[in-house]
Length: 88
Image (cartoon, rainbow, N blue to C red; front, top):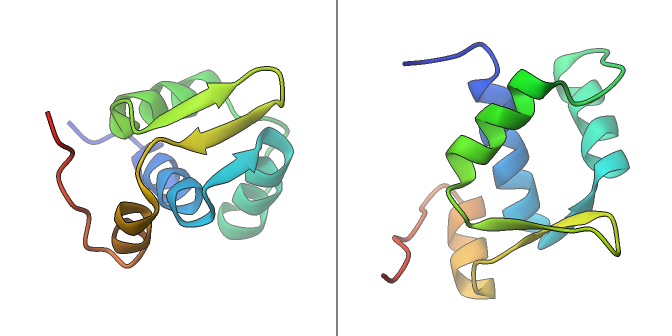
């Protein structure tokens, strides 16, 4: 089932994997530039984000940023649009 927030959530995931980590402010500003004005990252968007990243991104509260859990080589491949499956 596709939600209106899915393209933005998937874009956020790709950006975090490509950069390795991003703060909430960096992501919000990038989303504003890419998808139009927003005051915040709304709950439906964050729910879609959590659903789609499936544990490949974690929130670091002490630094207030998201960090990719993928190894650097997998992040590069993911950013190029060739995501590799995670090892079980």
